[in-house]
Image (cartoon, rainbow over all chains, first blue to last red; front, side, top):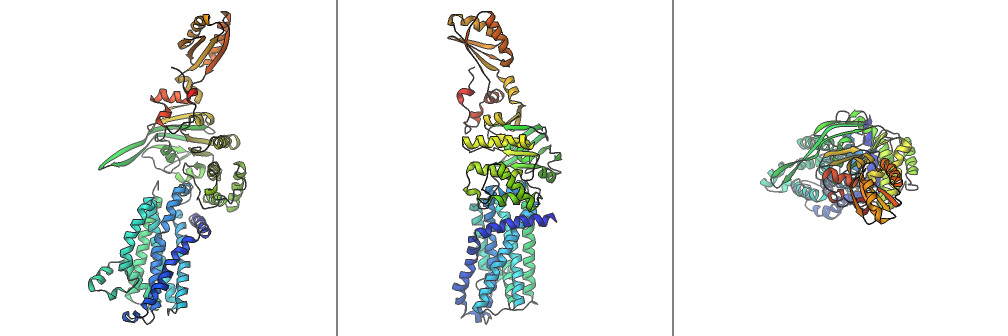
Length: 251
Length: 334
């Protein structure tokens, strides 16, 4: 039981600091909202070409996945400045579980993501998105799995590199191909065969397709199955990486 | 409280393509009794902090064993953590958090209830002269206040053994003196055992019952400050006679108890191990011979003399940034 208690203490501390300085939460939300307002309308005339009557129903799930990737990937930057302040070491010298130090932070990241997803979906509905309520909820669950994976990976990377200067380029190098090959902005089916084949190797593409399917209220297809499996798989692998990094001595 | 045998910590560093093994701590034996205040002295890079990190379970020893507060640092690290307080060199609180919240959360991670942690935290803020800073952000505190906050963090769970890593580095003299009082109070008021690292000679001298000197990852001496000084250099006894023509007679009598006696005007100087025991006899001797003294001065050797004798170099040369001891006072003429 003390593991949950310790996670909660860490979570509460993180949340308190976020609420005191909510700039990062807002900045994290700005990006998908800007995409929604400034890029979304461009899709209106072409959405029919790839089989969507309502372009918001196509676009909002993509933004949700993007939010889970980008928002969560930056979570580790906060950890670096905490490490520099000596907070991480101070926590490690207490008898608290090392893993609780990670899970407490991930709980904050997940809560933040949940709030941002709520705002995004709310805006989507306001703009005229035509999505099934249960489907959107399922989409959020998948998003939280991906976001948790990214946040765990980001925290692990932060604690390994301990340098913003190393982390920022690494994240950029990883994120660009992920964004371009996952069909977040436009469906990969618009592309040539080679591009579609390349995107098949990108787990996030399967996840994006799965979230789109659930938003349409279609749970029973292969896309949802594969996407969910990928999301669970990424979550498990990233959690393993994160916990082993936090358990490692001298980090 | 602390029993360490043969502690070793090696790091691998890369120099170009070659991997090089560095033995940061190279076979350290340590014994600290309950209630003792031990100063761990050495230049930067001597292995002080690395040793401390092994004793506080933050680093697993490459070799050797250590029992801290009754538990093995590797096998029972959680039990060790419950019993020790650690005030690290790098601070312990988030810049943007509130001081009181940090202390309460820290106490709760030790298993205290929120109420208990708050009560302890406020008590410590009073004791450590941090009134009204409960809701202040650490980034807007002075250096001395931040260090005292770090100490409050390390004490919130009432540990019986407190580790302090370079507690006064970077503080101005006034803040240092103030912090020394608080460190002194750890034992006198709370009965805690204190293990502190420092590269300041005066700090080790002022605070510790016993001093352990480390250099290049090895313990080179461990004793009380007085014993270390006594075994090393001997005290300088400086006699000034009123009648300069009889200085030779005074020097001859000094020679009977001292080494390397030299004469300079009306002064006769020599080195005497444990001068305090010798001087009364010397005075009687001089009196019996009818030699009148204008003054007598006994200068104790400093820890820097000890370090110089043990390692062949001055601590201030080894660690140029520690310039707090008065060089005149430290320099006993050879």
